[in-house]
Each structure stands twice: as structure tokens, then as C-alpha cells.
Amino acid sequence: MPLSVPHRVHFAVALFAACLLLAPCARAQQPQQSLKLDRIEFKGLERVKEPEALEKSGLTVGQTVTIDDVEAAANRLLESGLFNNLSYKIKGTTDKALLSFEVVERKWTMPVSFDNFVWFTDEELTAAVRRKLPAFDGTAPEAGGVTEQIRQALAELLSERKIEGTVEYTLSENPSTHKVEHLYSVKGPGLRVCKITYAGARAIPEEQLVIKSGGIFDNDYSRAYVGGFVESNLLPLYQERGYLRAAFGPPKVAPEASPECKGVAVALTVDEGSIYVWDKATWEGAEGLTAQELDAALGMKNREVANVVKIAKGLGNVRKAYGRKGYIAARVRPETEFDDSARSVSYRFQVTEGPQYYMGDLVINGLDEVATNNLRGRWRLLHKEVYDEGYVEEFVKKGVAEFQRDAAHAGNPLPALKVVSQVKPDPDTHLVNVTLDIKPDTTPPMAKPQ
Image (cartoon, rainbow, N blue to C red; front, side):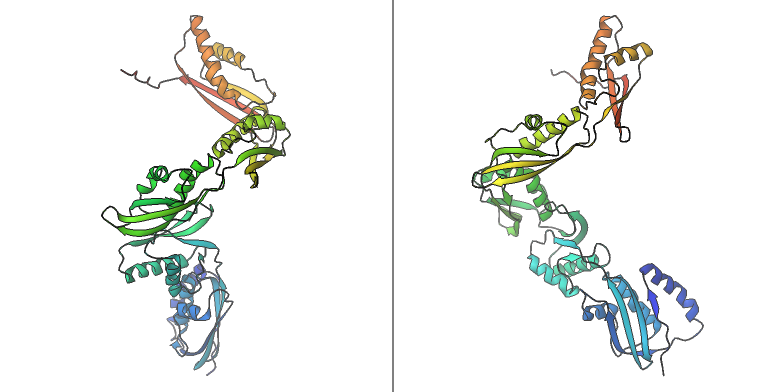
């Protein structure tokens, strides 16, 4: 007989759930019609292949189903995490029905990283995930059930190999790319780092690198942690010596069961490269300060070793120099230009100075009127004068101390004072209002050494 079943459209899981809640009341009044599936098709598939979508639905061709069964299949497809939304239509006759799903796939854009599965290569882990998710290519949707299916696939792999451990999932920032990724790791025994080697280390002895690696030894092995530790703690050792292109390769790790080491052994390779010397700096967008003033603040000299730590400190001084001229929002973005033939490096600094700020109101709280006027008279930054960002700290350290000393000499000693400064720039008027909250210092004095 001809099939007359209206198609039901589900644009989101929430709407689908609402249909399920309403369905029992409507269907309790009449028996459901059965239909035999002669064909099942999917429209809108891109990454996902039809056999995978069919498997997720739980339906098979030739199966006799009711509308409840079709709705349950649609629900399974949504819960798989592969699709953002879907609709379906049923055509044909009860003994020869065509079920057509129209789907919108989730976008797979976020990288997946395997952290500390030391028993497997990344290729083996990828193959294990593809057994459950054939569409897997090293990425996954930002949200949805796919992440749980990946976790289950990895857990099944551990179980197959009789490896003890629990697979854990988290969103994490990659220390190298600084992009958020899906991170999978194992929590369990036998992952303590007990040995580490650095192949290629010459400028810095391998023994010194091992000594500096205490943070790695203090934790169970984690590829993400080791990568972040190396970048934050070991790479600067090279960069401050002028090895600006030094790089550590990805860690190689293997279970270790020797008498000296029962856990894992980590091996890293370092490509030190060459020492670079400083050539020059160019300042693009700088108007409030001259190139000579900026070079002086940076403090780098021609042909000296290009010490990244010193350069970073010099950039801090550049920002302070701008702050003393009222450019309190100035930003400096460095770009490096290497001359490999001369083993030298030049820096091109993109400067965004922002507006120049001026002194606004000075408010002093916590003193009587006479003392307040006395202290205010010592403040040298006049209203609407170019704001000096460093002056507040200097005044708190020196001006207040002189104020207390003069009061003591005049026979009006004051208790030890604690000064808390608040600086509030107004982006509309470009005025900086300063508040000094002054109160007795109740901090206990430090004990003198015996």
C-alpha cells in the first residue's frame, strides 16, 4: 500500500528532544504503521562516507521499522557528533520504502594530539581511531560526540594490548603553535621520566641541559609538557648565547625497564645552528621618539652577540621610554631579518604609539588637610602636562619619604606610611587621573639576622 508518512525535520538536538517528548501522547491513541526499508540514502555527506553514516544510524536495508525506530536512528546520528543537524523523508510503499536523510556535517577544524601513548606510534593511534571513525584525519569538530568516540577508540586499543591506564581528554593549548587542540593522554603506572638525553648538544653541554630538566623528571611523561618546558626553559639558554635559530626536535620516548630506570626514557635532539650578532634596528611608525632615542633605550650595539634575553629587556625599556612621554598604550612588535652569510640579525620593529596622554587630577586620601596640601605641593607633574608614566613610582618612593623626613625634622613625626597608587587613564579625554591612598603601614618589621 502507498506510504503516507509526513516527513519530520529536526534542525537541532533540542528540537528533536522536544518531538520525542510530545510523541508518546499522540501515538498512544493509534498503532504505528510498519514499513520495510528498501533503500536508505544520505544527502549532504562530504567527509563522512555513507557506510559510516549508515552504521551510526543503526538501520539496515530490508529492516522493518516504525516511525519511532526512524526517529531513534536520527537521534543516534545527531548524538554521533558527526552532524550539526539533519532532516529525513520517507517515500514509497509500506513494503518498499525509501528513507532519505539530508544532513549538515560538523566542520572538523581542531587538531587532535596524542600526548603520552608511549607504546604506540602516532600512525598506530590514528589507525585505531579510524576503526571507529573512518573520517578521522587528525582533526575533530570543536564540540560534539566525536571527541568521546576518539577517547573510546584509544581506550579499546589499550585494552586490546593489555596496557593498564585510563584515557583522559582535555582541551589544551599547544605550546609550539599556541593553538587550542583536543589532547588525549593516559593516566597510569610506568610513565615516570627516569632518563633523558639531548643529542646534538655542543654549545651547552648535555649534562647541563639534563640538570636544567628537573621539571621534566618531577612529572610523569607528557609530550605536551616536555615541549612547553623545553621552549620555556631550555631554548632561552641558547637564545641568550646568540643561537637564535636553535630548535629542539619532538621528543622520542620508550618504556625503559633497566635496573637504573623503570619508567620511560626521553630522547631529544637539538639543532643549535649558528651564533648571530646584532646588526641594526629599524623603527617603523615611530614619531614620538627618535630612532636614536629608541636605539639608546634598546641598548644593543653593532656586532655584539644577539642575546634575545637582553633584547627583550631592551624592549621593556623602550616601552618605559614611551610611557615617560605620555604614550602609555604604545606597542612594539618585532620582526627578525637574518643575514646568514654574515651571521647577523636585524630587527624591524612595528611601532603603534597610540595617543599621547596628559596629567589629569591628583587625589590624595588618608592625610589631614595640612599634610595633604604639603604632599600635593611636592608633586611636580602639572595638570594637562604630558603624563610621565614613571613619575608616580618615583614620587611614592622618594617624594613621600622626603615628606616624612621633613615632618620629623619639623617636630611632627608621622608613623610609617603605606601608599597605594591607582592610575586611571581616560581614553576619551586622554587624561590620566592619579589617586594616592595613604595609610599607616602595619606590616611587621623583618627580623634582623642573629
